[in-house]
Length: 147
Image 1 (spheres, rainbow, N blue to C red):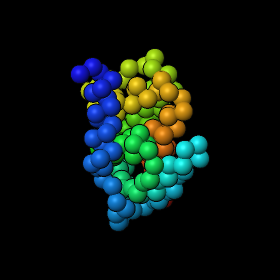
Image 2: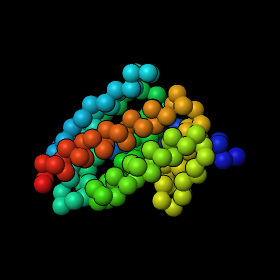
Image 3: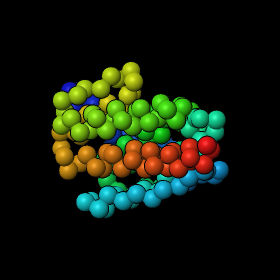
Image 4: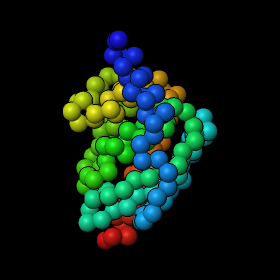
């Protein structure tokens, strides 16, 4: 199995077995994002307590890339600090806009490394970024409420 096949397997596994799917309470902020270019939709909730993302839940419809990306993101970010989540968002954004030029650190990105290959396909980048953008917006809203 080559690396691209491995990445495809990770994406399909997260698409089939979505982690943290289903909207949960309590939550401090909820956002709804749509990718108009392909019709992906996502409602995402976050709970922030003492500067930590204690929960991220979502309801999503769309392609395997958008749904797998939000599943992977929740695994990476639940339980981390808001600061870390924002840093990971920025790093993921940089990777996705690199057109395959940046290979992320697997120890940091874990399963999110699978989306490095997606960055070579500009039409699919918005799909992979949908959940990350929603998380950023919801977390900023929740963090503002806590200030």
